[in-house]
Amino acid sequence: MIRVQTVDFNPADELEQLRSVNNGKAGAMVSFTGLVRDLNEGDNITQLTLEHYPGMTEKALAKIETQANAQWELTATLIIHRVGPLQPNDNIVLVVAASMHRKQAFAACEFMIDTLKTSAPFWKKESLQNSDRWLAPG
Amino acid sequence: MIQLRYFASLRESLGIGDEQVELPENVSDLPALTQWLQQRGESWENALADQRLHVAVNQQIVPADSRIADGDEIAWFPPVTGG
Image (tube, chains in turn yellow, red):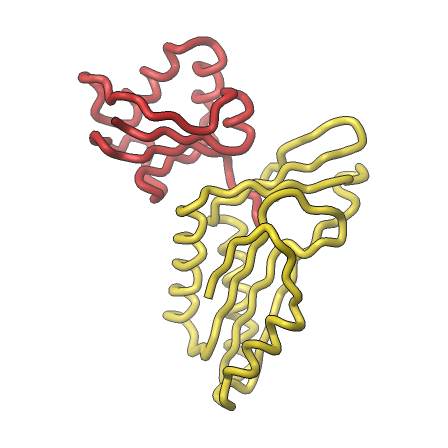
């Protein structure tokens, strides 16, 4: 399942929701949560704004899920990514992989967040005290 | 008509996020379309000359020399930085 949204999400609630519909099939759930840092390249960040390409972004995330499910035996996957203005310490992204065994879940979760970072159309703009700047890929 | 979209720093440089234009008669691929847009002025010439830009046609990343057709949605954007 994928979601692109402006509103916040609660990682604990999302994991519990996945567990409750799991019916005992998965033995492991691995999750990654990305947060807004208050410091980047030595500068204080007051706001982080996420832009996306409505339509293409959802397709890119769905493709990442499909690739993960083709490569590993997963019982569930979830990608939630926020867009719009965010503040330091806010949730940005949640990626979850559930599988019978932990190694598959770890590998699939890492693959999904790594692939998201290099291929899904999102762009970050940092607001500093007196200026804004678009981030370059790290 | 073709739908053109520009994102992030490129959208800010050009001062426009999306537009619909008639596909010019002699334009049938991305290099020709880019060249046609660059005739709009210096900011267009410079912004679209950035070799780091990605191009998507109908929401799929494509090679920079791909063909285009009437009805296509064409988007230019800088390298992605999500996650």
